[in-house]
Length: 317
Image (tube, rainbow, N blue to C red; front, side, top):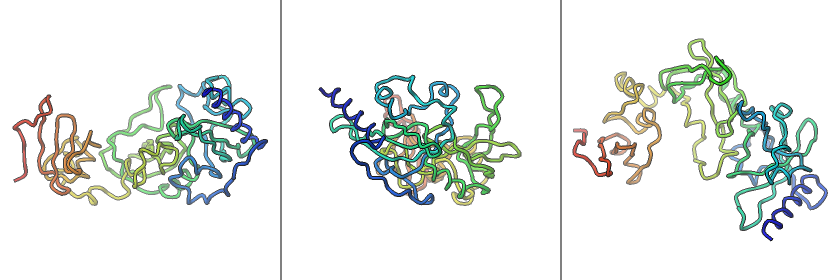
């Protein structure tokens, strides 16, 4: 009975997408500069762009379906997926959102949409609150407006090169962490988690810095108050904004931490901790426990295999 009810809902949602039964409110398209952090249930009227897909996924196509074939697709028929080559780069407008039935999964939706240049009706089902293969078009526009032609400071020691030496391996471009690069172009990328590629110039070479501009089309559980791109780059020179001597920055570049570093400097050197304790005053990385006094690293402790503290604690004097 539950499967029968689900199938009825799927059929009804497809009909809604065709406009033959029921009614779906269609919101006026939002301003291109205002669409940020849009939850799935608020997508109606928003434009999205199909991303490129990784090479190994292109032959399978996008997990989107022509409305009339959506029921087959939702039940696992891969043959009715829309083909990659015909849709990459195209824009769609969301026209309807249908929640899955109560008791199945309240966080998932059937999304109905129209291809902007052809009027074709498509449908797709969210998984973990997102649709793979799409970027919010206004995110792409706003990323271009904010970053194109500017200097940014990546939080990475290596970037993927824009040019590839084979069908599978891009050239790696190494840079000092937090060093300045110039954004020379902005593309739609090929990963939904970081769907926008900032193309940066590094000593005459071009490299890719993937970012997400907003939290739209990512699971709500991972949303934060700060923009997601802040996890990948600085817009100001961190050697000034975070402070520290040349010697300290050599330590960061080599992936080391030392007492006296700030939280920002530690995060840049070692990345996000495995866990935090005591109201964010303790950060744990594997067998290392870092204790902060305010925002400054006060001590580094090595934990035993049984997670008991060892006696080799080094503290600031």
